[in-house]
Structures are given as structure tokens and as C-alpha cells.
Amino acid sequence: MTDKEAIAFFKCLADKSRLSILKSLMVEDMYVERLAERLELTSATVSFHLKKLEDAGAVRSYKDQYYTMYSINKELFEVNIIDILSEKTSESELQKERDDAYRKKVIDAFFEYGKLKAIPSQRKKEKIVLEEIGKAFKKGKKYTEKEVNLIIADFHDDFCTIRRDMVAEGILERKDGVYILNREKD
Image 1: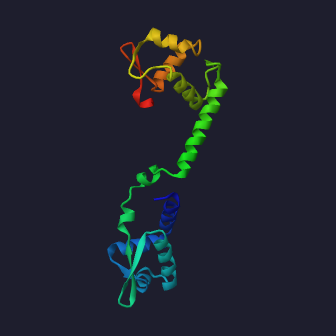
Image 2: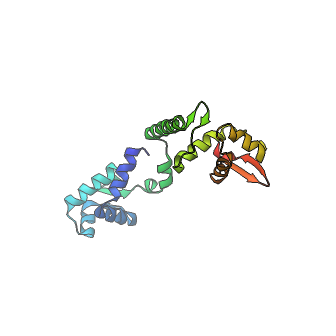
Image 3: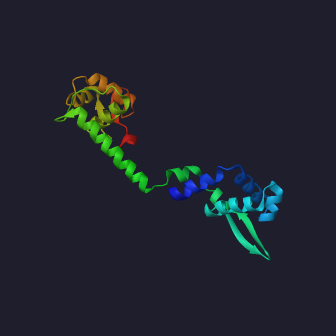
């Protein structure tokens, strides 16, 4: 489902009359006049809402003798909202580009010649800085505290604060005095 289709779908659900029509169609397929009687709406109003629902793909129409019958499109309602939200779109790529540009801006602001000028006070910026320092660690390699301190000291003199914050952010895992780069943060 594209973003445009999702917006149309959610808009069609945001109306009491359309929701009532959908609930009636869940019971059985119906034609305009029957829906109008059942919901105490005019036929013109029901037709208007059915057109919106049909455009959004929520209902389907078919001919049965002299009537145009409407049925609910159950497949559309079986789609998980999480699937709609996690679907990749052109906007997703644009957001990734913006995120990458923001990360670069933060890194450029806080690093000079590979050294950290200052530890950011804003947590989101500090996390970006800590992730950048985390790139100096090898995946799967176990480090002693002394080795961690030496690596961090190449970036900034306050290695204790940075080490503690890297553990707190989950970039490094510490167990029994041994540090390892968190695999999930790769």
C-alpha cells in the first residue's frame, strides 16, 4: 500500500457515516437504498460515501439483477497497520538522507582532526558521537578496560565518562570486566 493509498484509506475510516456503512456491509452485501433505510440517511448521502469508500478500496461493487450491490473488501482490512507503517517509500529514502546529513553535521561540529572537541550535552548528539567512537572497536573482539580506555583516549581525554556512556547507550557491553561491541548497534 502506497502512502497515498494509506492516506485515502485512513481518511475514509474517519467518518461516522462511512464507518456505519462498513459495519453494515460486514453483516451482508447491500445496495444503496437498503443502506439508506438502515442508517437513516438519504440515498444521495450513502452514494457519496460509497464512492469515497470504493475509491479507497474499502468496498467493491457488482451487479445483481437491477441493483448495484456493495461488499466490503475484507483483504484490505486484514492488512496489519504495522506493515503499512514499515513499508519502504520514497519518503523513507528521503528521511534516511536527512538523518545521514544530520549525523554528518553533528560529527563535523564535534570532531576536529579525528579528536572529539567536547562531549555534547544533548543526548541525541552525544549518542551520534558515541556511535562514531564505537566504529574504532572491532566486532566480536573482547577488550579489557585498559584497552577500551586507550581507544577512547585517542578521541578524548575524559575516557571514563565516554566509556560509561557507551555502556549506558548499549554501544559497548560490559561483563566481568570484559567489553565487547554490541552486535545490534552495527
